[in-house]
Length: 202
Image (cartoon, rainbow, N blue to C red):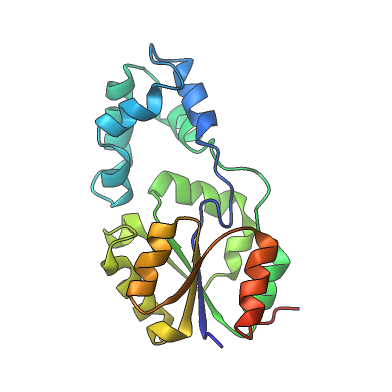
């Protein structure tokens, strides 16, 4: 049975809807909602920001420059965080039960604006013992470094860690690091995977 349980955040605990951000930005920009993700990609904004290589103010400025828009920082924070679905994909009761016998860690590629919003709006994060966040540790999944840091914080050897992520590339990288990992395919499938490993939460 695993000693530590590690969870990705986006599309595992909280559903993501990037389209809402693109549509909101399109009302301010000459670019359409369909064009905006390509503009952001060409400007190389998301990954450096999620590795903590730029401040919130710099990200705001570069985002506005790339999309040729003007928006104050406060409204920009709201726009950038408007991708999270209000109802979590996994219930509070699951984490409340899991924490009784396991160390719980969040392992996420994220950024300061998003994580502060999530801490404020999703109380279930109170169940986690630690947060391994790309913008704080300076490395992103699927880089091996972020898994090494996560394992170090669990205090358990990699085979005694169980990790769930929605992206197969991140699952594969975790397995290469010696971690037992599965791809998230819904609440019921996750519960089945946990039971197979002797994990109980009821």
